[in-house]
Image (cartoon, rainbow, N blue to C red; front, side, top):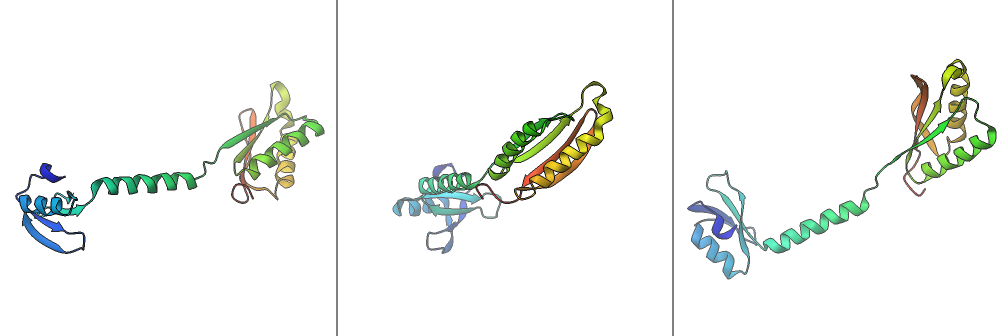
Length: 166
């Protein structure tokens, strides 16, 4: 930028998009006469390309755009619900309502059935429980990863049907 440009001759892009090849000192003088900065945009070109612009304003606009983009993004969180093969109906309904809320907020839900000790012989009950949960929540989300047994846990992932707040 300005005096830090090392080349002798540069191609200058003026604010009105006009091009000219000038010595560096003339290009800097031109930029200062317009109350702007001379910024090197392509140092490897022959001759190097410099642009006459208000560098402070450019940085401000760039930051502003990044801030706007960050406001609009939504981070999807994975919420986990844990069940046991013999989970009672009341407990199931309670956790189902939580899963419904998570899906409405736009978060993913990982439903896990935990088998302890010899509970693994009831893996069919765990599969039925997860399938029941998937059918009960099909209005709010869809199954992303179907139920599968991994060690002593059977899990399934549900993703929201629509965006957050719908």
